[in-house]
Image (cartoon, protein in one colour):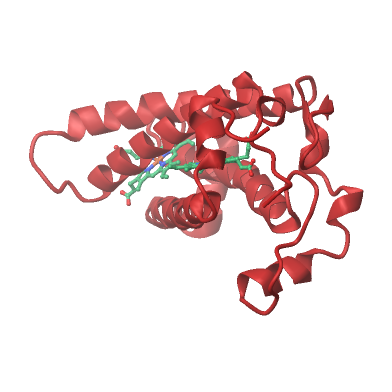
Length: 210
Ligand code: HEM
Ligand code: HEM
């Protein structure tokens, strides 16, 4: 692969940090969430709930910060180029994504041999990353709807009534966790399938290719 985005301009340090915060929170939320759902060993419920309650605020603040930063922080917006522009351009359809959605799906289904040369993020990547934003907010909504101190707030209570009660809301919250787990498994696989250069830059901020 010649065209790549494994250099610092493509992943400024702030986004390396927000990605780390997100990863650590996700692990804490999924682990404590599993425990709250089914306490698979004794005497940890207080800690698990505390962990969940801290991480849920941290992940939300991190996400809001990440969204605002997208409009101000400059990052490479093209594969193989260190030229920078505001990050939000990476998240919206770009000229180089045009007519690539089906081609990318074909490539992943082994119906096409060559990878699709795209903008910094390919069309599928863009859709998947972008989808994590509303999904996290929906997870926060369903979470606060089953959270004692907030569950009687009008907007939350209305949602709970709409889905047929707190038990259903809890099941939706649990189901969305699985959506995150499946997303992360595919994401981790695709990030490392060619080599570890992408992981080296996103975690260690280490450039491997010039
Ligand atoms: C983003 C904000 C989030 C909020 C406000 C939130 C809130 C909550 C609350 C209040 C509970 C119930 C805890 C209890 O009654 O002791 C809960 C349970 C749970 N949470 Fe979250 N959470 C959030 C994110 C997440 C994420 C990202 C995951 C998984 C990746 C997750 C997975 C779970 C699971 C599996 C349960 C147990 C549900 C069950 O009993 O079936 N939560 N959450
Ligand atoms: C061991 C776990 C993980 C690995 C190896 C990993 C790897 C990566 C890599 C290499 C990139 C850069 C992609 C590129 O430039 O082509 C990236 C970006 C991204 N990852 Fe992960 N990731 C992990 C966990 C997660 C988790 C748990 C989430 C969320 C649920 C997540 C969400 C994202 C998002 C939204 C981006 C877009 C970039 C940005 O925010 O600046 N990742 N990840």
